[in-house]
Length: 124
Image (cartoon, rainbow, N blue to C red; front, side):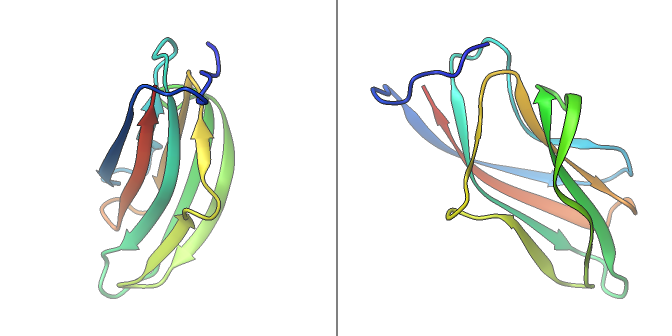
């Protein structure tokens, strides 16, 4: 579980993850496996409330292990997103690097109200 040196990279692959929060349990948004040999640069996380009439509550956390394992450290905690609105949790001016064996997960207070779009770069 190392932090790969990104000075002389051989590959940068742009990716987008789309996640529907269909339960009230934590759901993985993006995960970097323990021996991936990669670092993930998260450029943006946008959460959209698709409920047309009610606000929706969201928590987004960085986890100390892949697959939303270990300890969660909140980026945003119990933030309300108005009906039919979006919240920018992370943008390119404040990226997050996910080293090996780390992950990001999201939890909604109400199932099926929030969708997450995460843009990131897989660097190796």
